[in-house]
Image 1 (tube, one colour):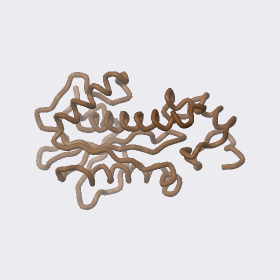
Image 2 (cartoon, one colour; image 1 turned 60 degrees about the horizontal axis):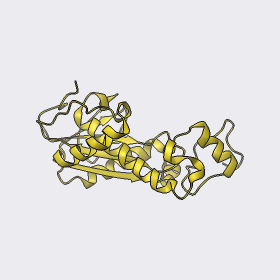
Image 3 (tube, one colour; image 1 turned 90 degrees about the vertical axis):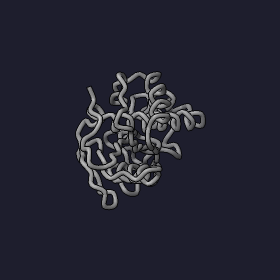
Length: 198
């Protein structure tokens, strides 16, 4: 059973990202503030849920959250500042957009760049421990999937409608066969050794 809050002194937002390990597309992040009485039997780490359940939960989260926001950092920015910093930046952008200012942040993972003067706690596997982080993981994942399905129409050869930009064998082979699309992260390893034109 997931927990409702990490602390009870401040308004708390949960944050998570999606797409860190992908070869193409942006990294997305979400920030969510849930009411204290929010709970849902199916809410969990987005990776543990079916696509259908994720999209059903997305609508409930958006309807019942006190505040929520989704933001992204594109492939060019990822190449410029690296994926770890891009993940933190996407979270910062999501927090910026919240309609209510949180007094405390709980972050999925073990590292985070401090957001302004807001205290935070990094929680490994937080998306399977706290409702607000799980909610953020679902929003980040589904909004990123929507984006990847959109650009898959431009470049069907990479199978993004199926792999969403993750480095499947089919995706890697497509890069080897067709080269990079305009959406690929040029600093990411596609083969070992990397492609000669990296």
